[in-house]
Length: 352
Image (cartoon, rainbow, N blue to C red):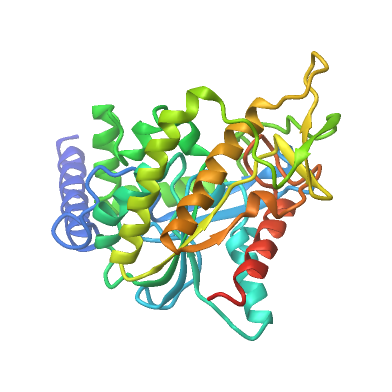
């Protein structure tokens, strides 16, 4: 028994030494980028089965590389368009080949203008977080450069106080901060996470919502070019959003890129023949509140964009979405991302 225990102890010691060497060689303990406790999805390969989330769904793959970027690129210093935003830009439950960025890449390539379009979105981020990434994330990506940075913004800023814990890019929970610190340094943990992703392949435990607007009765509200009444409680938030958006454009330009600002649609309203339509509520009355709030932020986005001379795309008043384009109030299905990608291509093809 002593002999067996001695062999086991020696083997465990050898494995421990090998693990330590592997961590030092392949991890970020001594060399490599310092991501600290930032809540960034890095070295991620996840497989989901989205058949229970939206019609036409099925097995899909979501990947982020060592730098936390999504999408193909040969050189981080030669990116044509870098996209930033929250979950509607991250597109967690849309396959790598079906994101709106992927659609844009194909359309530009088909037009004889292949562009490198890379995704740097983080779930839950508002413009507060977008500003922070220029200080805390992008400097850690060796040689990162982009000709244009496209900011798909507005939804999370409507409730920026509630999103603050994500915007700081670090959880206030000490245990979660420690976990993120380990994740951002440990090669062994990232190997474990990759293997776990394989084991969980086609996981159906999705956290995003289910469709809440498909099949609803829609009511014509007002012409799309007419502003909705601004809810009184948004005055302060819109003022702060103006300041953050102005700072974001300054950061983008200081980074050496040109700014593209894009407004955000939601499933709570639709465009038809130049009119805005909203869903009828259970009480029979039109649900005007969600549209009014989003419209106020979208118009502020276009106001700031025009004032600063950035490239402006009013996507929220461009695309006519329909049933099947959203799988919850905010997030597009692949059917919807195809429309977003097409609209952005059409808006940008002669401007960049």
